[in-house]
Picture 1 (cartoon, rainbow, N blue to C red):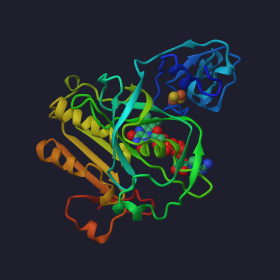
Picture 2 (tube, helix red, strand yellow):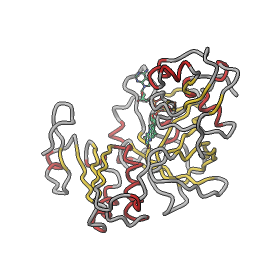
Picture 3 (cartoon, protein in one colour):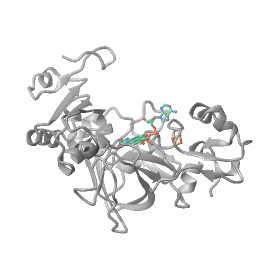
Length: 316
Ligand SMILES: Cc1cc2nc3c(=O)[nH]c(=O)nc-3n(C[C@H](O)[C@H](O)[C@H](O)COP(=O)(O)OP(=O)(O)OC[C@H]3O[C@@H](n4cnc5c(N)ncnc54)[C@H](O)[C@@H]3O)c2cc1C
Ligand code: FES
């Protein structure tokens, strides 16, 4: 194992994928392993594990490197596996969000529950803060973004699948390009790298991790409503869940989807959701905007306007 990588990533090289919902952030407590009890405790270990677990030698794999320990015992592993993925297409859905479609290079069709995510391995690279393929009509959104050429180290990042496994063998992701808050700081490393990847190129990923999913419709009350709330690119797993319920399971459950965005231009997949709402009477699509012009506010397409100093205030 490389001593520079955390154990969560190092174990992947040995085809061992531990559970994780925070993607190595030290906040989900799912990547538990057992080591010698003298191994240093990090603040994340202390916040996620009980005193008893800490004393018994449990630690979070994502918070430790392999050079810290001589041996470890696995507590739980997932069925997630490593895959080489080829980028099929990369298009802007909104000024800062891209839809990326991948296929497995091996030709294997991955099976996964809607809501799953994959962990991408971003190699060390040279990069630029402005997208390489920015369409002319989006240029004005990026004019304020400082042009910066930079280098970054390797890292791993998680992205949720925006589709289910029923419709296609493609793996669809929606990724928000994280811009830099100031000139001293690099833009988001993973999101910039993956969004600037050229179609045809490949990238390593592990998954799918099925940590977030809906209970099978046969096991739920068909009249109990499902309320989904998401914003920006964070709607990816919700889109997958909605399509799974409506198209794959033909569920009659009432499904309410509140989708938060700043402006109309940020309402990604708007036409697709409207089409679903028109086809399935049990599905309600409720876009909620936080920054609208007076024209947009009166566009009459049903978008709610969210106001207030925090941008999260009352709706009207
Ligand atoms: C389970 C899971 C699923 C996810 N699914 C999605 C998804 O579907 N779509 C999606 O877009 N994201 C998703 N994410 C988030 C994603 O994993 C990344 O966290 C996100 O893309 C940011 O990573 P990055 O490498 O681009 O940015 P980072 O390099 O991590 O930086 C984040 C931001 O911080 C700024 N920054 C960096 N250093 C500093 C500093 N010193 N001071 C101040 N600011 C700084 C950067 O400029 C950037 O704006 C998911 C996360 C998890 C855990
Ligand atoms: S992966 Fe979430 S705490 Fe380690």
